[in-house]
Length: 54
Length: 343
Image (cartoon, rainbow over all chains, first blue to last red; front, side):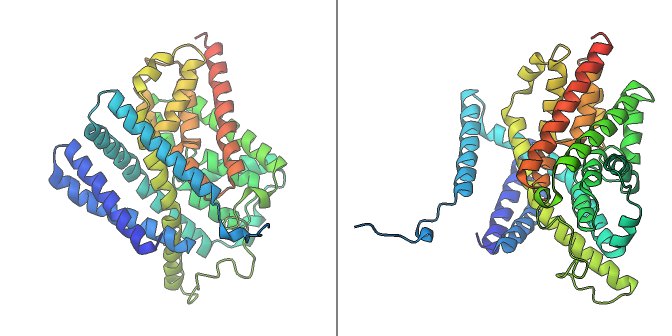
């Protein structure tokens, strides 16, 4: 996959995990920023992995 | 009439197909498990997300520290410096490798990039493997946490002795029977002296330039190892969500099964070696001493996320042995301790 697409996938995955985490602790407002940070991190790592393979 | 098709006309990426099939299988199993148990799928997903976050966020800072250490080693430690202090025998190198953890205090996430960097600097295989397996315990932080949890006694001494023993045996075996070129991935094998890091131009010889170069190398290592950490954390969280721990707990009695259960638990939970003592403390009244010591010795050596990270350094066949040998040796030791204590 293209690095940019992987970055987007990473963002979505991280955000999803963060929101689910927010639901489980009963505080979605906290889960969303956690998800954004996590998504950025996962997106960067995945896009780096993608660019290394291409 | 036979038509010779070019081989690349129908590329069959077997590994990718297997990977996709396995992923689909695991996902289907997880959905089936959730539905069969009558659980709310949303609840299962929330539990998965929380567990994934728990493992990932706990491990990321240590991976970052390990990657930075790796960058500093690449920039400031010369290959000759390492080669000068190396023990000559394999056993000596393995014993030395177990003590390296005191110089590079890292847990099981940070140890992987550091080991890879040391291999590139010419560290012998046996020493590197011993360091990889022992360093997550052989550092002051983990000593202290074990001491605080269990005090100075059988568990602390047993953990230290068993860790050193297993690391030395596995390192000596792998160092004796394997060729480093067949064990390490090309990116981990010793680099040529003249271009040990050609894609990171030093840009100058001043301290600032060197530190900047170390940061660049550390960032590259972090992102390279990070992908394995994401996969490993996801897999560990998935298995923790799928495998019912209560039923395993019921099976985990007796001198052998208790050790087996605690080792499987250590593998699944993927808890950082800096805090696993406190987790083990919760099992003291439920499980035998041998099982506790095996948990504390095996967990830092091998777990799901570190196994995934090993695949970034070693070839897969060796990763298999790096998991199997510590597992069997710790199991054997745990059972022997149980028998000796009359469990």
